[in-house]
Image (tube, rainbow, N blue to C red; front, side, top):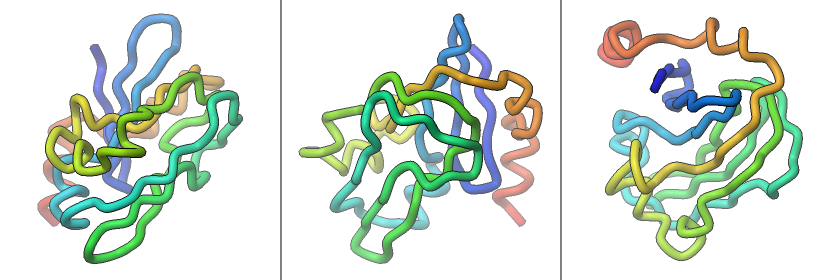
Length: 123
């Protein structure tokens, strides 16, 4: 499994067949605090890199999940509708947001590996 990170504090895990799972990083959920509401996109939505694809509301602020890559939404984590805290409790596991079919695999090259992301988030 290849995991990449965006400057907007999202992680992207590449599975086979150009399918990716996207969520927020531990750093992002710490900055947001307790999550109270997540508005997910619809399955079938076409998104471009840089689009706002989810609304994330916490006790501290409202934020957006910015698409780190382009593609078609093929699954959303319905559990987040009733349990938004999952994204805080297990941001890189059960708290994933969307699964997408990539339209341009080369966009992954624009993202950071774990070492570069750690350095970025410490700045």
